[in-house]
Length: 421
View 1 (cartoon, rainbow, N blue to C red):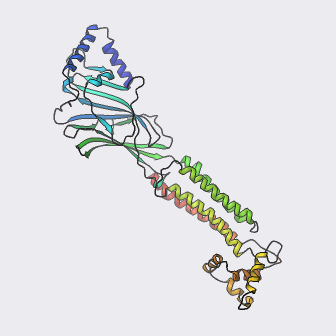
View 2: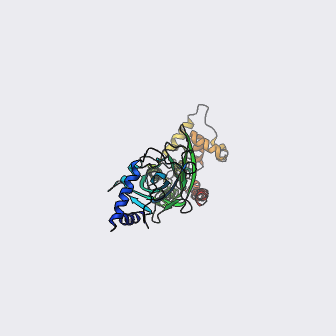
């Protein structure tokens, strides 16, 4: 039976009973209990500190780091509120009765701007038993901070704590304990769902907190969550993977079509960067790379490598225009070499030596714009056939997809092991 139905039934049993004498006796009883009651004095514990038994019912959650609506239930014993009335074992009271009795100063250590709904009246339920036991249930909207380690984002599994303690009382006066009606002391509605997370488990603990006033008793509840990855697969991983595959189309475009290949490479880089900016918009500015950052940066690297690959194709293999014969650039190179003050070198004797060098030497010549290498390539070219398909393009058609597939396999194996563990 839920709280609202129980409150209504008890209210009708006591206040709307046909027995007018019973109603009058309850009214007199409550007046007498509060005549000498001092709400500023803590109830004395029977055997040591006053024990406040607490449990919680989570009605809804989300978004994470923002709010959680729950019912905070607390019970304690106050000898000053004992009563003896025939045929009455407990009395359900309105929230105004709380103004006249002592109640624990429970607060949330990591709460931020939490509120108690007051529509249409303050959402508080109070019941007193004849032995002085008090049961109080409050409906609260809690805004609590949830610290997250985003190294594995979006394959992370955050643990969000909720910390409770009593303000102004030490462990010598008040002790908080979980009232374990179930395994953890925290219940959750079956229909509670989150857009980005699944609730894996909930566990509770008792703890103490020390400050300038002394040691205070407190309670802890931890919500173990697991983030849904489907949204990121559809909005980030799949689009970025397709954009990288699109950059490989340039390997099948003729190397003489420089505008097409360069434009394709720049477009893929800008598209991947735009996707990354959108996904990072709602994240805190953390000083480390998340799993999503790693994937996006690798995708940008592959797009950039496709442009650099064309630079290598253009420098090492594009030595003749389509019509055959030396291009204007090669003519300028030959003229510069012929104007060498030391005379003309014997290029024919050095062709084989220049073309049979290591990759590192060729790379250095590419960076320095070595004219001698370019002139030798022009001299050894087949002007009749023109530019054939570059061997660099042929090799790239296999290296780029294969290496990217290996990266994807390692990436998902590495990060999903945290999600599945």
